[in-house]
Figure 1 (cartoon, rainbow, N blue to C red):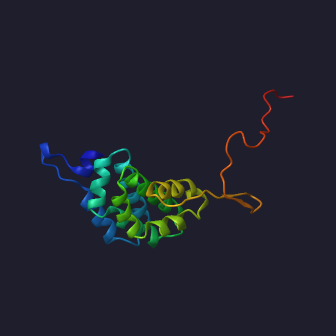
Figure 2: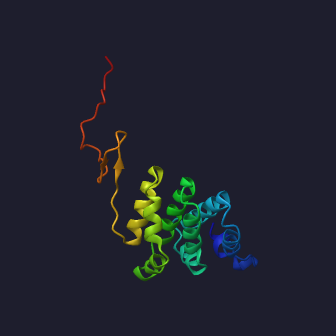
Figure 3: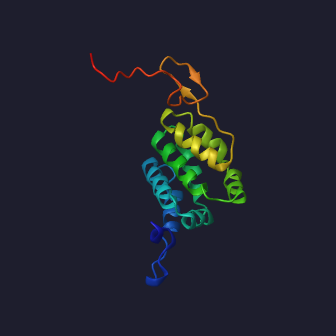
Length: 163
């Protein structure tokens, strides 16, 4: 993933990152392409600070946020976008995080967090951006709690012996 993102100077292979971003910008209405674009950038940035910095330099976060704004009801794309933003910013300086916040990331990620399957990823992205974030659990009966249920807080129905 580093060779794809940064290229390999020893073999004169250039980065494919600018091409990926150009394709995403050229086809904003294609939800599946945008979903895979966000997933690819999430994988490239995972535990790779140099890749994350290159993604920022190529304006990858702006392309991710644009995809998320374009397809607000595509839950998989929203989840991949949150993962990508989180992986990109996880080792950034406050100044670099501010660049992404200026792109409108906080509002976009908060909206993505409204989808039940995106809550954890949106929370992590907001937390790593330095935004105030809380996890809300929506129960089957429609009630909500603002704190996640932590192991040991509620008595378990687990029975170690079957009768």
